[in-house]
Length: 458
Image (tube, rainbow, N blue to C red):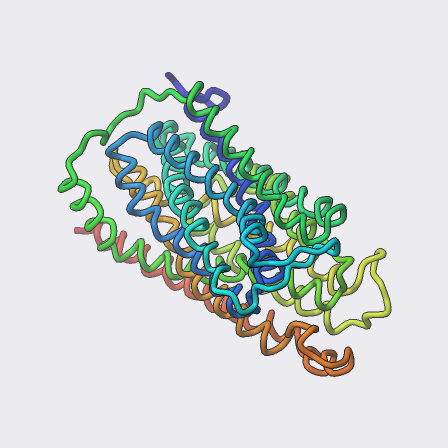
């Protein structure tokens, strides 16, 4: 089917739609995953951050391998498998606490507090359930973006990824929006109930793929495992792409703090009445409102130039987030606690940075992919989030424990205030990481340009 500016294939449209469902499911859970692990299952800050970090890291490590397999078995089959696993996984997150209660391993009270798990190894039963989400999500990461690459041409690919990324963020906005009403209505029990929302979203996506997904692009399907292995070795030995992934990891380490650090940071400093899920929603809102405009403004610029613009916005974001704790907590700003208000300001800058970086990063990788290897290359492109999840969540747990610890660990509020007086230092660390990454990307762009010019001269 021919593609013009306003004409896209059915496969492209369905892929964008199910990406919206999948992102709504994922972010509805992920924005409060550390709260779920701590408040429902009794893990401490470092344990919760470590589990969430490994969960997120594996979700972004496996797409390289899942993408190579998806190229072989076909994108439709891969998505049917993926959404089946995701539905079972999210359903499991909802049922797990109830199963523990039924087994007498946990006590439940009308105050929606779960007790009895602090000394019980039964809580680690959540890990195989989370593994289902990891396996399902690993296919989605490579296949959906790979579909965009297959169903677009080099001429309209930037626009295609811009549309795709808008759907990603509409889904993220939808998922995060449901968390606040659930917690207001149900307290901590809402952290359990929202998993049923996520399961319903991925089930709808499964139905949509079954009935509506059809593509005429089948390059690479049926290849041998030897061919898959050769392609995998080739992409993993591409030094230029690997270095770029390491540099972009700095951006995503800061970005992941919306889920690793921000919820606990805001609730502890601004109070339980704060709305971290809604603050996080500012990010996808900004992306949806500006991504097409930014793509249009940067259409004549290279992908690396656009990404460099975005990278230098990230240190500003981190500094804004830090500034909230320096202000007088008794003086609200537009009816918000200073910590909450400056967090929102920082997230606005973070969302703006993302519009310059993420769609063009995916475009850059898609243009490196040979026909029939789109799933492999687009899966490989997510390796940055594997690294940023491991290091970003790991660093978050350490920094929260050091600068903004759990208030319940202290005998008095005054003791906790003294221990958390420098909580804003957390954002200085991430601001420094963002700045180093931005400078590194400039150096990378200069070196790559020189290498390309030298190659053309030969």
